[in-house]
Length: 403
Image (tube, rainbow, N blue to C red; front, top):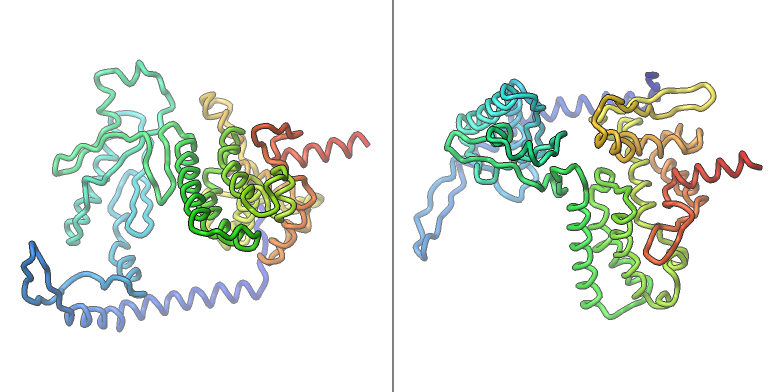
């Protein structure tokens, strides 16, 4: 791996940010926490139960809701939570905490159970009771045999429990920060929920507003409908034609209602309204995220690496597929973000990949994408390929080689 050197301005900027963080921590651990404690002790509240109001009592714990300062003390409060676990990988975002462990036998199950108990013990020691009824577990099984699931000891490898005796059984679908994760390792359930939510919002917009002019309709669509279709899309970006069509049909149906577009074919409507297909926009998000990882604007939590070739310039390294892995794992290799996003980034022109300004990169990426036709797969149409930038790039390369 070749480490790309950063400009002096960015280095100074990072140093200043580091100093600012240290100053903020010192301030919070000193005066701010003292002020917060005095503020909390000065608050009083009353409770109404079945129509009877209690007397005012001082509030000795908690953080005022809706305040800017609220999240910072909470993060400081749970900062050492994950340091208690011994065997698993732990991740936290706000008040959402996950434990992840590879299960290779009964000892692995016991290790994960022990870490779960340690987290619960930490919460009780710190006067923070967890809602154990909301605990969920999802299992990704390499062996999906029905016979294996019917074995007597199988539940012991997938079920966990809390010290209070609450049994946590595996779920087929778990919502993780707004994204539905399936035990089948497919994104079908999440895409279906996304489509249903966007269709309901589109129906509400069309019923609440009579104006069908392009300006009004596109403003409502982009802010209220399309935003639902693109939430966290680099994670679940589909490659199956049927799933791409399900998402694209929401935009196809909505744009048909715009004045002057009802008689146009979908591809022509996109050109007239200066819209990208949802498929093309998802690939754009993937490319931008890789650029952010490269330029340290986003955390590199999935292990992206980059090589600088003398002739080809800077390129993302595509991890090799493990030929000894299970067939189902190898078949999903090409559709993973780690692989597909790297491939998309690598087809960009060399000078565009080397751009260090985000605004400049987005502008250059827009010009590059305009060179490729945008014909998303939809029922009733037969495109020349699946409309991915990768497919158009391969077709363009073949045409050049034939010429």
